Image (cartoon, rainbow, N blue to C red; front, side):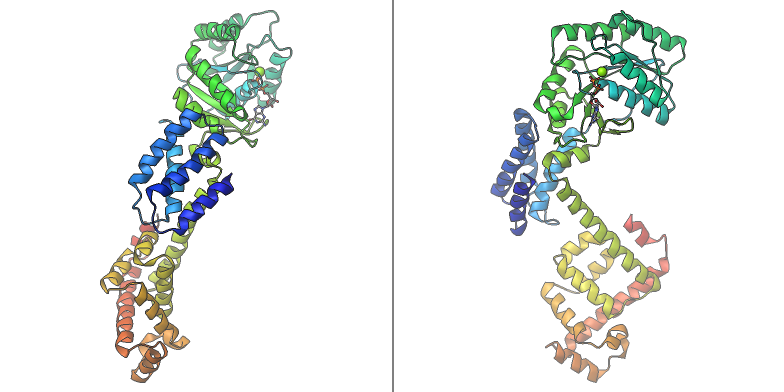
Length: 441
Ligand code: GDP
Ligand code: MG
């Protein structure tokens, strides 16, 4: 799948401009990618529409290739849709004891996630947590939570056989108040599918506990079903967030987008394994990449831009600080400028070098001229490049002839090098912590 997308974007990359047709073609593939990642149809449709509008509006952007542009727009829009306003990992647990209700279908990962969150609250926020299992249906469900509690050093409500879920919830509340707990977590029973009995039970528990957070735990691998589950639980119980489990598997996580779009509730955490530490705060960035199946492409584009910027800026800064700028430096700059697609690309890529670029621009340098200047420098000896001030009339004639140009062209190049060298010296005096360092941030 990402191969197919990749080839479409490859094709786009090789073209000069992004036409509306190109956007449409690319988005058709994105639509398929979304559906294959289990994003529901209406959600995918709306999403594509939103991207189409944005992409068409931005079709003239020049700083990156058209293919990259589409990838970025799609990715950023996904990220935008997936993001809530607040920090997803920050649960509302003021006014102790704060109840957290855990709901979801059987086998979704409620009990595991309850313990994972308890551990997190204990370790990261120093909270005293009490966990209670309300699962009277499944034999050994209560013991399961108790074992996990022992493992992570979090208290569990003592098990009393024969109690119903509402009675257990009441007891948990009392115990949490008396015991001075900050948080108490209610791990409910699940069913294999949504049914009335289950909903009524969870509803009754909710009314007793009046939870500050109601977290729906869903298996990230169940795709479309997860969306139905979320819709149902949100309508009936009212959820405050979603935890997506089994994201360590190879599900594409499209359910995240659908659930977000359908319920409007934030994804809070992502489960990444059976271990108690395998819980992470939801990161829209990552899931966006995963849904598209080309997070690597997006990351690559971003990384390529970043490393290039940093490496070049660092290299230049070292020389700036020494106040050096000979023909070798100039050659490097000219070649980079050609590689980056001339002045404009370069300007965008190189923090701290804007001033120099501007100067070159004012000197009327275009791509053809860049090549000629590099030819002139190539025609110099090693010694001449390192010390251009030694160039006298005879050397100049030889160099110009070697590059198939006039001495007057060479003089222009020498003047540019001298001006830049002067500028470097001035900038170098600003030293560390000066303008360049600032520009690199
Ligand atoms: P519950 O019925 O909703 O309480 O589900 P459980 O918490 O008992 O989890 C069911 C199974 O899924 C257990 O074997 C868990 O270890 C496993 N599980 C839960 N979360 C994850 C996860 O994020 N990744 C993986 N690989 N397994 C998980
Ligand atoms: Mg359970």
